[in-house]
Structures are given as structure tokens and as C-alpha cells.
Image (cartoon, rainbow, N blue to C red; front, side, top):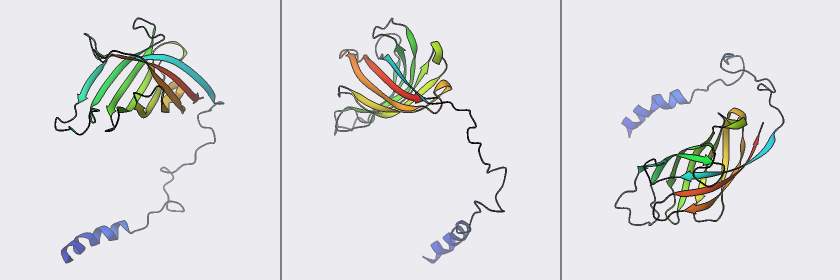
Length: 193
């Protein structure tokens, strides 16, 4: 007990010292006030997008790569709990594969539920055409894939979507049981400047 106290005493003394946060001791280079509107932000507007997300597992050019498989000893859940896939999925104007490419969904999803097929989705919608070319929206949320409509939050963005927030609603358009390929309709509602 004494040895532990002797070891911890210097740490306790070091971390119990007050750290100046304001007043004469603050470093002006570290702490500066920000102008009221530094980025000249305009009025927010609400935008709605609809496109189709193609999760292609089969064929010569899959857009999904499995990066983590659940342990073989994981017999307690039929959902594949623990599996993680990396994606670079096309986003198209219509559900057909040859439809106009609008962008890509880049990120990953993993099976995060032991009781149902519930995914944790973390992806960026990277827009490749039109007014929003080069801009991104970031989605991070839970996707219970067997629900008719799944809602996930938009937590940010870049380019024209800087400071974006909102939500997406996903609904499965088609799913091929043999190949595992899926087409999902995404409706995106986002506030941005």
C-alpha cells in the first residue's frame, strides 16, 4: 500500500495544480475570440435529394469488400454480429445499374446487433456531378435493414454542405438473395448554407 501511495503521490500533486483558463496568465496565441460571422454564412436552406445506392457484392467489379468476419465461435447470433464491410457504392439517378452516376457512397457498415440484422452505417456521399460536384454529406447511424423505411442522421458535410445537418430515409428497392446485391432508395433531407 505504501509503495502504491509513493508512486501515485507525484501524479496527484502534478494533476492537482490549477491550470489557468482565463485572466492574465492566458496565452493570447492559444485563445482568441471569433468574429460573429467568420465564414460569411448565409441563410440556411433545406434541400431534398433522391438517388439509388447500389451495394454490389457479386461480379467482376464488386463495390463491397468484407474486411472483418465474425469469429467462427460466434454461434449465439444468426445475424453475423461483428461483420464489417468497406464500400465504394455508386449513387445513381434511377434504380437501374446503367442509370446516370451522381456520386459514390464511401465508408463502411458493420453488423452491430445480435437480435436483428441492424447495421452501423458510416459513409460519405461524394457528389461527382452538377452543382454539388466535389461536396460531401456524412451519414452515421443505425440501419435495421428489414424495416420498410430506415432513418439515419446526416451529421455534416463539406464543400456546399459545410455545417450540414439532417436525415436520410432508406428503403430497399431490390435485394438479390442469390448474390447479396442490393439497390436502396435514399431520400436525403438536409439543412445547409
